[in-house]
Image (cartoon, rainbow, N blue to C red):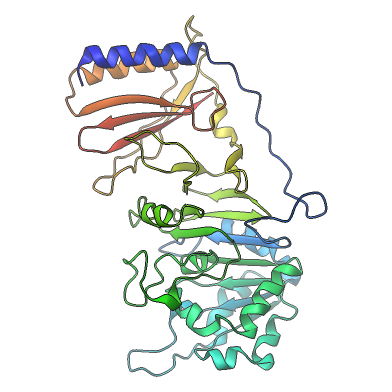
Length: 395
């Protein structure tokens, strides 16, 4: 793109922002109440879901502490399900789990009542004796691994029903990595051969446990570069909401609403939105953001979007600050986020145009109103090779 074309585009963008109406302040809405709202379409009518994106070294204690709290704290009754780690060993023999090893981390945090639940045999899982450990549980945790093992052991059994009853009583179900994906409706990466097959042709491994209905959940999207992997899932099943979770990041679901917690981003794949032809069909949420799945709308953005500007106001636009965003629009590249730069948006575009004049890899500069509130939210720089640099614009 020529410098003249970029300049013309920037003028249009600045004008649009300058005369856009200022949006009302967004405030956090209360969690949906079953007594005051219609039955949820996505999350459970009662109880809470904790859905984590995994971690190479285990979830941060800050996230686990949130799950402990939701499960009733030190007096809660926790059940840990390690089944995703495998039902059989390399010789084909049933894998044996030692309960003290499985529950050690949880007891080390001061929890008084922690039990393990595991079987490789769905016939055993379909017995009252086996499932009764869940009868008074306040919290269930699904460990990571391969989620098709969880399906093989518990789908269609009394134990499966008891998992849902934990939520009905107001308890919490949580999990990370495989323990996150199993909570959705469509079982992303459910193939028993490899986790690189996003949509399996194995009919018994296509359905999750539907704690979070009308959803498809993926995890490790940042470290394993899975940002785009839910695109074909949502293309085939456009009614589903795609949720991609970064490592050390989770969502806490109550009813049809969730809040993002943790260190990184959550990618929302939503077929009901309109996207630019050059744009990836998803957008990003970060810690503190809350989202309504029924309306497919962001309810509240965290205060990270409201840092003060150190620049003087200009005549063409209100002062804003720019913070380095996440750069993952392509599977072929990952560009390090830039450092925060306090600057007004028009002056920023002016500086970017100066850079673009000497950089033939730049194709387009685009300002995006993510939540359609009349305020600019993201700045995208589209490159010739298909990559996109995404910046968040603070107000």
